[in-house]
Image (cartoon, rainbow, N blue to C red):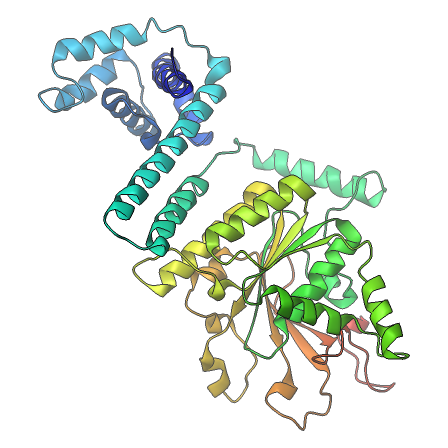
Amino acid sequence: METEGARRRERADQSETAVVALGLRDPTVVDEALVLGLQEADFTAPHLRAMWEGMVLDRQKGVGPDEATVLERHESNVGRGRPFPDFGHLAATVTNLGRVPARRTNLETYVETLREFRARRMLLEAAQMSTALHQGGADAARMQEEMEEAILRVSSRTSGEGLVLASTMVERATVRAGRIRRGEEVDHHLTTGLRALDRVLKYHPGHYGLIAARPGMGKTQLALTLGRGIAERHGPVLFVSVEMGGESLSERMYSSSLSRVGDIHEQEHEARVSWDGVPMWMDHRAKSLSEVLSSIRIAKARHGIVAFVVDYLQKMRLPRRDSREQEIANASEALSSLCSSSGLCGLVLSQLNRGVDSRKDRRPMASDLRESGALEQDADSILFVYREVAYNRMAKEPAKVELILEKQRNGRAHVTVPARFSPGEGWFTDYAPPERGAARTWMDD
């Protein structure tokens, strides 16, 4: 009896034949398949892979492909150990492709079948490697690393979303802006409850935001504040604490929620009540990159999260690369891609390097991002957290925090937003000047 695996293999074989056949009949099929994310490695038959590679090169030059150009191009691919054993095989392949009953309307299905089958091949190869490592005496960490590598390779394969004229995109944006102004459509800008910050930093679905600071600045508390704010206003949020365990995270949330008004029993009651109805999910068990990515996907499928927070990037257990910088860059790319593909807003915390502590002005800069310049490139926004009191105990306003918006891909940047926070005394809140008549700032405009 034919197994499901064999049936999948047969469908994949039929699909790659169909794609190449369609490409011979209509050159624009090659362009569309590339937009859909088809890659040379998605083909398993060497002769079809070679033909597809040739078609792509022809399209890049603005010619073909057609039967004549295919026969001419693959003369060098004929011979022992090559995709085509002899010229007869090459000619027969081209002739047979012309008879394949493939339909242009099924192109997307063909491409998805090939991509899905390749993903299965990659995971099976990783399983085989893991088995070989087990038999060779490797430890569990090394075997897990191999599987994590495979999962990342599968999840990072690009996928096209179709080509659209620029004028069409602008027209859509203009129409949508008008509908939002008239109240006919909901603005998907995610607000956090920090009004001053919301005025300048526009979190939105698919946004990959970085929050970075030196230790002791309160970045975890800021992330909890922003995550809770989004959850209260827009829907479920997942908070992944790579750094803290369950008990530490619980204590942090409990102490932050105490009102400090009334006796301790009243405070504890208020702390519990303050979280009632807040759709914020916590995960303190995911520690590796693959576990974090999996946790986010599961939370989206089960709970419909609109955003996630990861605390923090450098604490994750990452697949090995040639350098620590490459490991961080790989993790950042994976998280950024997940935001883009899932439509989730991601807030990822990052550590800054020690160089900032040696400067006279210790306010962070983009060059202070620890271990990877790729972080600056991947992020849609970068928000630094700076507390003067962390360096100067005699600061005039010990509770004042500067939220420095270093980067925002599609909005205002190089802006400092004042906020208020005292460690152990609650959440981040909007800043209020200590006395009336204080100097005006951009917030008063």
